[in-house]
Length: 434
Ligand SMILES: *Cc1c(COP(=O)(O)O)cnc(C)c1O
Image 1: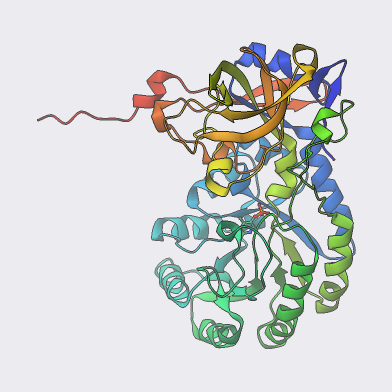
Image 2: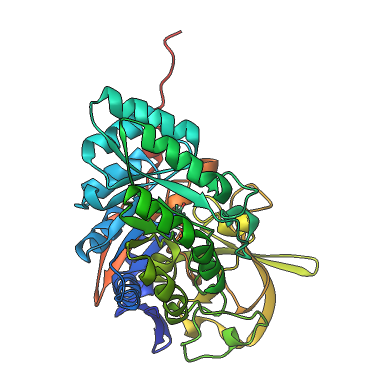
């Protein structure tokens, strides 16, 4: 469920007309719905109620402090992948004791910082990293709580760049080796074995890969519990969201008619598949959703700058670019794109058009040959489902200032990150004296 709907022909986020946000803050601007994010959190929390569980929001999906604060207040923990993310969580009022620190390449500084702040666990991805953590904790005369990341070797049927749980990628430790590495960890003086972790990929559409991964890992968890008394299993994130026909609940029909099938990852199916086997394990269960909590809760507002025709092709050149939202260029991913003001476009003149950004790269597009109502210069568009892996991947490529971010709650909206200025672009750059 998300809270983006047409009301009197105007696209609203909760009770706020998105045209108003664009007028006040300019474009391109990311707009997030607090109600949607909290609703998704509450649904997942309720579905997992039969388990002793903690939802650790994967900060990398959207790390704006206002979003982190929203989730911290709802009771969430956090899955972090860098020292910078831990810093953000603390700045947002999050609890370090509810943070798990993942990632394949943690630096000394990051490990020291996480030890000082008292994270609940380091999720360790290699033997080399385990050694490193042991030494750093020893030097600080403390013990590092650790969980090893198990790679269960399942294929989640998702894009190759976001699949992480098969033996062919860099993540985790193979199931066959995990027992031996835990034994090594048990011999180390400065680490304390507290849990086990897995994460099989992202944008996973069905419950089945989760269930089969849990099936494979469950016997290991039982053994670890009896040998080392582990307290938790983290089953990772990766629950998929709707990108196609994201605005199904609207009242018009042209956007319903394009041919792509949508799917709806069902929290209920997920819980039905994973709760019974996890309950038997009788350890605390951590889940680390990123995209699921925030993905459908955000849009990127952008305005059409020019309409360009070349031969048979027609382009709408918009003011957002791949530097603002890189998902289409990086993952060939699909985003629904809709006009904010339906009155400004005509249902009659449907046509195929490429919606592209101003960046000097052929990969700078949001949609190719997309069936759209006839667009004009100045039309305001919403790129849907942009709440996850959107702003966090933004860059200054082509010296474009990063976009603004706004948060809506009910009939209010607030700027939660200022649009960068040209001065921001050169801040920190230094001319050598010579
Ligand atoms: C990226 C990541 C997540 C979140 O993935 P989503 O697909 O956004 O849910 C969770 N856990 C780990 C270890 C990750 O790397």
